[in-house]
Image (cartoon, rainbow, N blue to C red):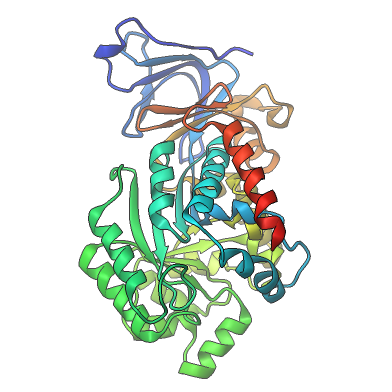
Amino acid sequence: MKGRFSQPSMADETSGLVRYTDSWLIDVDGRPHQGDFILRPDGDWLRSIGDEDVEFQVDGDGRLLTRAFQNWHTHLAMVLNRSMGEGLPLMRWLEESIFPTEKGLTPEFVEIGTKAAAAELIATGTSFACDMYYHPEVVGEVLAESGLRGIVCGPITDGLTPNFRAGSGDALRHVEGLVRNGSSAPDRVTFGIATHSVYSCTEELLKKAADVSNATGCTLSIHTSETRQEVADCHAEHGMYPIEYLDSIGYFQEGTVCAHCGWVTKREMRILAEHDVHAVHCPVSNQKLATGGTMSYPAMIEAGVDVRLGTDGAASNNALDMRAEMKAASLIQRHDHWDATLLDPVQTYELGVRGSKDWVAWNLNDIRMRPIGRDGRRLLANLIYSNGNCLDMWVDGRPLRRDGKTLTINEKHVFEQLEDTVQTYYAKV
């Protein structure tokens, strides 16, 4: 297979430009282009005329360029919990498999799990994650060092957050400090606040988190209307459904991230749209945990809601691969609404890459990517429904992966650390 990288002799006079020759490219509009292309660090692209100064030049024969994917709901370090408690119903899965391990969670464990997650994101073509997990300062540093982008939302759930005394307010103050101080790579990684859910946060805590978000401009993230029980309990306690309740207490800020939204009324959808909320569809996790409710994509779009895609954690999904999530999203919407026109490959691709400034090169010399069809018309459907190998990833003009090898993470070392941690600690609980 071709695709060897070479650097021009005057690389010091270049500005992060990458030239691919003889390749295919598909941008957000889903239209295939063939030829020579320049990828810019700002995310733009143009056709190459061959005389541009570039930092990297790639023989793109056998490569398809697409935008890198975005994963809008993750618990990255839960790669440590992958395949634990298989076959258990939701509450038994949480109480017997997840919560016991998290009682002994350490920054070292989170670092190992997040490094493994970052390696998986890069290897499967995803350059951004909106995360919600403990020890966010560790998660943020791992993402910064790996070259990925992220919004790292630190949890402040009262009584469940490790290392913080319930009712003390220390968890929120800690996360606010991270938000105000910023990460070591502020252009790529920012901090936000994760209020787990309406059932695990007091009204006072939800309001305080919203106040900090309003004062700092940071992102708020929350699980919303994931299960029927959650919705019923909220209505019994407050006389309102979760999104109505959150709206009534002034919780929502522009750009708040609401994960799942599987049991949502049309009135609540209008509330989400009014506040420019990102509603994150997590179809694989919802099906695996049998939550019974699936976000209604057509109704969300009709209401004007900004819908994104997320995998949830590797514990409840088993994978962080956005191609599998995109496929599941497309299929479940078609199945649930009896409409095979919903989320066609172009719409599904746009949903998975919305806002992405980064680029990925896929291996076309993979039988799953063939045939490409006349004028490349089958390329996008092949990638989403059949899968393929990620060869290269570019973030801000920097290569995170080249020729199928991740450059910013030592995968072998991370795998060894992951196995050792799971066998010495996680196997005991």
